[in-house]
Image (tube, rainbow, N blue to C red; front, side):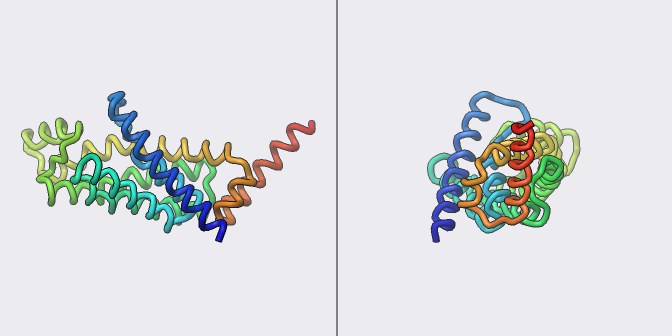
Length: 205
């Protein structure tokens, strides 16, 4: 029961990370970086697919209510990111190579799911900075789906691996005692314990 409470608290932190980091990235005009799923990736990697999906859904639910209602349909994308990350972490753990590969998978999967939403609901233009490139591609004769997809995959191929790498670093820095309280992910716990033992051996030398 305590583990579930800790897990839900960690989800709430993940939601806050998504919202705050997305706000910072947007207002600093950082190119090709959104950081809007950092908390989802972290929750998925630590807690598994269910909590990753919950973090993604709640994030878009909140942002759609306080910021832009158009963000609600993209909850599907955010949930998918949490689910994919969660299943990968449970199966393989979340070492640096796994984090990078996960980021690449998400970089392709996110626009594949998100682009049809943008095209069907918003005619290919969702009101973001990527609309500039989308509009240019449409005017150059490209189909709407292609025009909406290309800017998204370019941005995601930078944003998603970077988000996964940062999530890996956060997990690496988390105390083993804390991690064991919030997750039952055996692969991740074994990975963390191995890293902690290695650090202790280095300190003893």
